[in-house]
Figure 1 (spheres, rainbow, N blue to C red):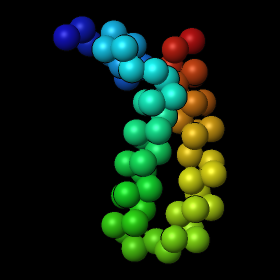
Figure 2: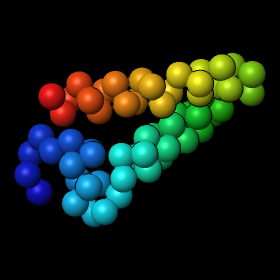
Figure 3: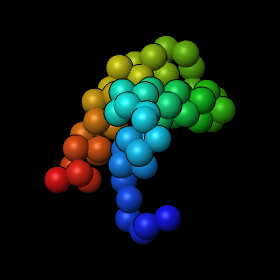
Length: 63
């Protein structure tokens, strides 16, 4: 595998959409927060921002 490929590039080559990548990353982040003992309210509050943060990272890395 080539070095420095973006997750989105790899996903695209496997016919996985950017939205699906965002959803998987967001889900993993929520699970990590839950394991750290954060409350459901805290996780819900943060999850509102997760998609935008992930999208920002994806767009930044692809530019």
